[in-house]
Length: 283
Image 1 (cartoon, rainbow, N blue to C red):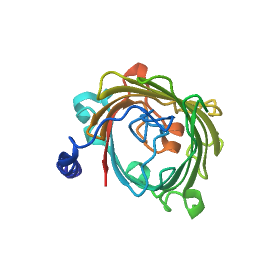
Image 2: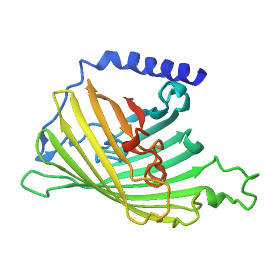
Image 3: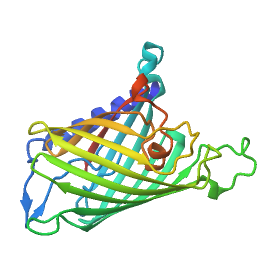
Image 4: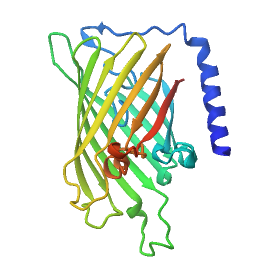
């Protein structure tokens, strides 16, 4: 309960700080210097990274919250009792290069990342925006008492991702995300440490400030007897003067790439899904 109160206080502060510039920010959905802009308004579609980057010398702070499964109803207050939180800072070194650091309460994961644009979609030119994303994480939840042979390197995981998006129209954007990720230690013995997936995502505007977002991860070499699932997520973006509030449902509770692609446990068919949100604040 203390964690929930703290989180609500933090969100209140973020909204309070954002009020002054809500009206000064203008929703841009245009072509600048013949380059397509605003294919995605959030740094993530739902779980997958989008091709959006933070502007040069700007800092974005993202609070991501994922409640527990809603299937248990009032027993866990629809997941409120089993919530996890991720705090993520992303800084724009240039308009095309971002660095980030985060900490997630899911498996007590610390993560550092870099995101960089390789090419931009251009009117009457190159038809896609291509962005690279790389990260390294440290899982600090492993206990030496349970894993006596554990070494620091066993806590590490890596992600290499290519994000390829196309703004099809002023309302529709699509993305393809070939992904390689590696965990030095996997909890399921038959699973290869190196894993491959292809992400699919899209954003459809419903109005001036609303959009529906969907992404799906197709794992390509999951062990045959693995208990984990491919992640399917559906969300809604609300734009409020340049700030984006994202609400979503997913069958994965983890919010880092290795986690939601490799360890999604929920199942949409039986209601084992997780509600959550992302709230960002630009400094």
